[in-house]
Amino acid sequence: MNNSIIESLSAIQRQSPVDIIIHQMRNLIVSGQLKPGDKLPSERILSERFQTSRSYVREAILKLQFYGLLKTNPQSGTYVAGLGINIIDSMIGDLINFNQDDFYALIEARFHLEITAVQLAAIRRTEEDLKVLKETMLSFEIKTKNNQSSVEEDMLFHTKIAQATQNNVISSMILHLIPDLVKNITEKKVCGENQVYKAIDEHRAIYEAIEQQNPNLAKEAMRKHLNDIWELSQREIKNR
Image (cartoon, rainbow, N blue to C red; front, top):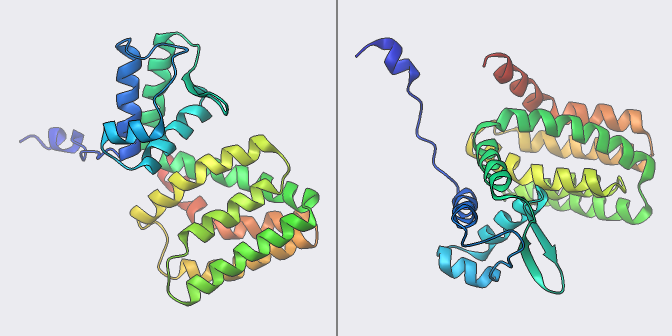
């Protein structure tokens, strides 16, 4: 077989359960079974229908909400956004492709968002923010030192920094970026085995800068913490 043909082939991408749910919901909308303004069935009914856990259904709904494709009313439920079918179809298609193809672009976006977030957190944090951040940091250290998985605690540390910015938009963006990133970083084995132990000191440096309300120190501490995956993302983007 011609080498150029072989080189043009790419690995088959396995879709995550969340992407499959999003894809099926897209089909329901495009086929007209779900129309703009229609109310979605409950999470329980959807999970039974999709034969998957409610956590996957919830994550899919949250992603679609974040991109404005679903709207939620706490009193009455979740509805398809009042957009045209063609627009919804295109946006969901972009969302599925975005999740699959832009891992390194996500890293780049996260880097810039977290650099901004940590500076704002240092300026605006409250004593309550500091207390919650310290508790999360210590939980991460305890689990790491006991050789237990500390992925959730790592995610929480970063999301609590975002919440300390007192900016709901930044907090929401980071909250939606980090779970996908951590999952992909773990699956792709992007970070070395010792990175989690390095993160103990790096988290402490970030916490102390926020405690001192020193945005410049916080910026440098976060930059150092994210430097390895930042450099990796730049190499991959450059080589595309």
